[in-house]
Length: 164
Image (cartoon, rainbow, N blue to C red; front, side, top):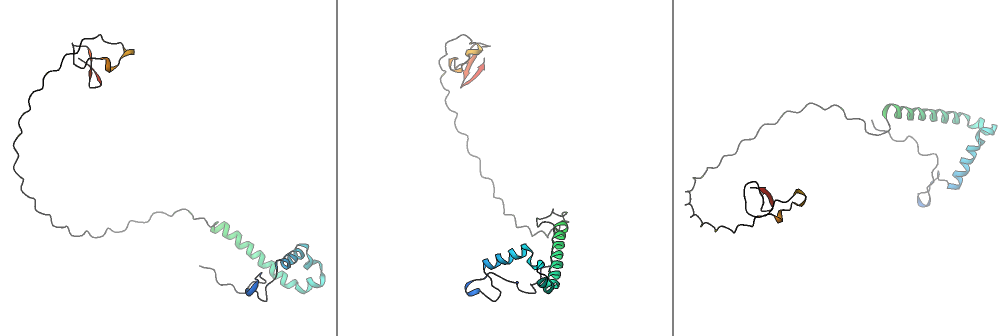
């Protein structure tokens, strides 16, 4: 439920210029009123107090009601932050499935092409010279022969060390 409209306008305001009205006061006058209130002039002057006491009593009760509203809102409603999410509701019905579209015809497969001719054999490369098997600390593929040698020897197979 939303808040209703205000019942009465403000007691005074600080409007200036063209928007100034009968309830407008200056900032200096507001400071004077506050200083008199803080000093308790409205209570200390018996004549003034007796005259305005019923209005002050009503204002005091309104102030207590507003404090109680604040307490309730903070304790029961919260500080305005969004609360935890509620439980997930049931899943709704699934809608109807639309009609399936027509499947297009599949064309016939074309004939297979002829095999190409075999290429000529390449010439054998030159054998690399036999070297000694390097130790693990000096193992470097660039120093190994590039062709497979005798069984159990290392050779450089396109940058990978391999064993014959």
